[in-house]
Amino acid sequence: MTRFGYTLMTEQSGPRDLVRYAVAAEEQGFDFEVCSDHYSPWLTEQGHAPYAWTLLGAVAQATERVDLATYVTCPTLRYHPAVVAQKASTLQLLSEGRFLLGLGAGENLNEHIVGTGWPSVDLRHDMLEEAVHIIRELFTGELVTWEGEHFRVDSARLWDVPDGGVPIGIAVSGAKSIERFAPLSDHFVSTEPDKELVASWHDSHGGDTSAARVIGQVPICWGPDKDAAIAQAHEQFRWFGGGWAVNADLPTPAGFAGASQFVRPEDVAESIACGPDLDAIAESVRPFIEAGFTDIAVVQVGDRGQEAFLSEAAGPLLERLRAL
Image 1 (cartoon, rainbow, N blue to C red):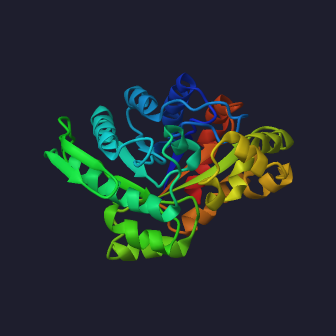
Image 2: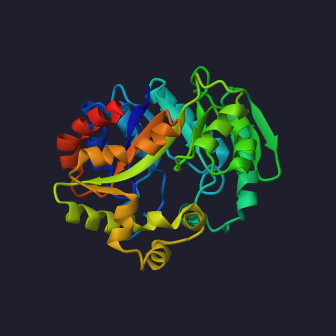
């Protein structure tokens, strides 16, 4: 059965609000919650970017049942992989086994801030592969020294390690990245409902789909007034239409503002279900179900109306989603 999640969108809400939303989402019946890991919002209008790992620690203590995940963390530039391993292990212990470490090659928007430049996509993938190896080594709880092409680890050991480590999901976008990262990951992460990509990932795991999770994310903008919902989606999420080939490389919110200046509200409404019609919103998720995604997180766009969404719309929406 497909599991449905709620997105803690750090780019659009402050940390205390996000903890409140996390608790409300659990109460409404969501199965899991994913958290973005950003240093900057995509657009100035979003206005937030609290530290994901502090937030998740608070959420782990404020909730009891929902699974938690990063969606996704880049373990190569802003964070050293040894530090990511320590953070993930601690969060797994705090959440009593509810955490999944989602990893990806990152975006210039968040990683350029440490001043080391933004590598080419091939180099980013080389770095990600090496980082995953280091993280898995540290999850064993053994002493690790690593001399790699991109990273060094000197006599490091995690002293608080959960039994079995932490499950890892890796965001992939095509056949080459699946071939490379599927053997390193326990679970598959993607933002596109590509059935062939999902099948390819399963094939790389020997066709066994029993334990693997296929995790996706869908933006929506519920609201009682459709035109107002479209306007909010345009204000907050017009960057979304650029695609990841663009989104990965732009360095600042100003860059995203420039790149999306000609995106119209009607353009956004074509890709994001907006307004009060919960049946239409549920139908916008159907392509991910049909593509074989086991876990689908919705993003309710914008901080305005988030509490109303959770108190009025989330429960009925979950009923419709599960009926699909």
